[in-house]
Length: 63
Length: 131
Image (tube, rainbow over all chains, first blue to last red; front, side, top):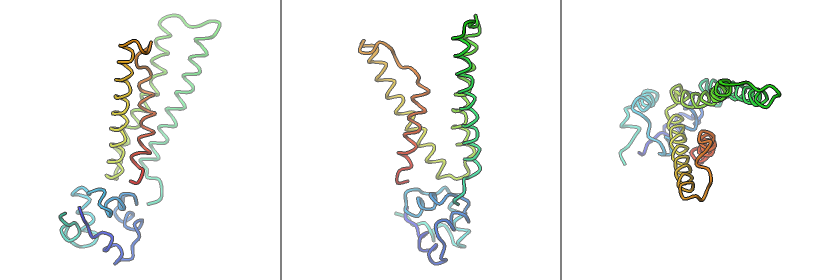
């Protein structure tokens, strides 16, 4: 699944480690989600959406 | 999040405890069995089970960390690692078993738990490679 995580992170000048810390996951997890290797669960997707104050659909895009 | 998560700290502490116990019990038990006055029945059977217990503890430690992990991607990788280790171990012991059935090898599969732990270690590297 495609996502806009990298762009949203860059807009806030956050590193992967910064985002990982805010989400309480590993940096490896952020990298895997960002590169589309791993699709997050709904709870984590909501957590990401809440952090960026957006809806899930605004961050995660259909293939 | 560069620090070691608390679930991994518990994992390493438990592994260290069970592996240390294993070494102490194994060498103690073998020394006793090979001593001038080896124990009689049923002590050898008791020693065998007691020696195996820390290894069961290692298996418990591995499966317990799956429950305790609060990072879903790391849990996904660990699950993959366990599945790969189990699949490769099953493949090895199945082929080994038939090599024994066809008299190519004198003994059938042995030390299956140790094979699994070895495959678990190798699978860890494979699963996390480029992850």
